[in-house]
Length: 142
Ligand code: AMP
Image (cartoon, rainbow, N blue to C red):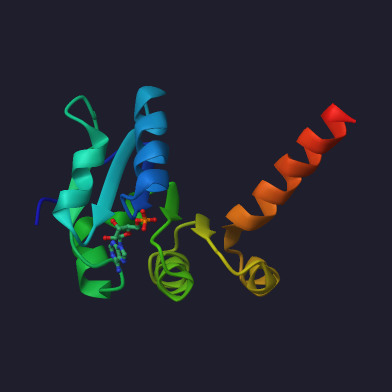
């Protein structure tokens, strides 16, 4: 596997669905170094041909794979696969085994988020964010 180049501000994004691709493209457009990991290489099509970052095909729950990628140099590790348990497992690997300080996981089940926040894993719950935005729209119309 190609090792990641040393970079001061490397962001790793796991899961190249719509959200992962969007995050990767946004960070890359801001001039940051980005590596996107997905177990399905077809997913990288969403990045388009102008994406300036790097892509790695593989399962991010595989500790050997993450280690071989050089992920320990990342300043931020964002895991947005479509499964809460997968995201939590990957987030814990990034935090505990590779010592990455900034670890963010998408969680569909908002009730679990406080447990992971206590472990130093920041969580983002689409359901909660949607509820906040909907309330704002309702207030604006009122
Ligand atoms: P979405 O369902 O659009 O949120 O996309 C989730 C993405 O996460 C898909 O492209 C999956 O292939 C990817 N994915 C799921 N599990 C893993 C994993 N263990 N390692 C790497 N990528 C994964």
